[in-house]
Image 1 (cartoon, rainbow, N blue to C red):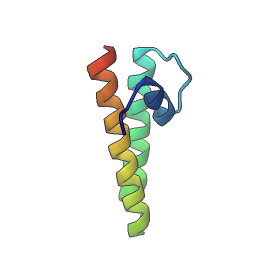
Image 2: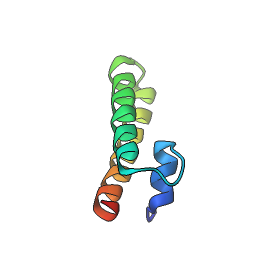
Image 3: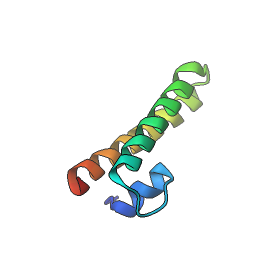
Image 4: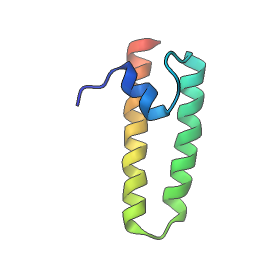
Length: 69
């Protein structure tokens, strides 16, 4: 799937248009939250789900950094 700016806002759950500071702050907030859930759960399925969410977050952040800063 080709990512665009709307995907970034959807993944980060912020209103369009968001400022660069808002995007970066939200990315860090969700990254910490999802990583904590992934690390504290014993359920492998949940760990994999949150690993996938972390990858999606990273993809959105990298797209934003490369194309909109």
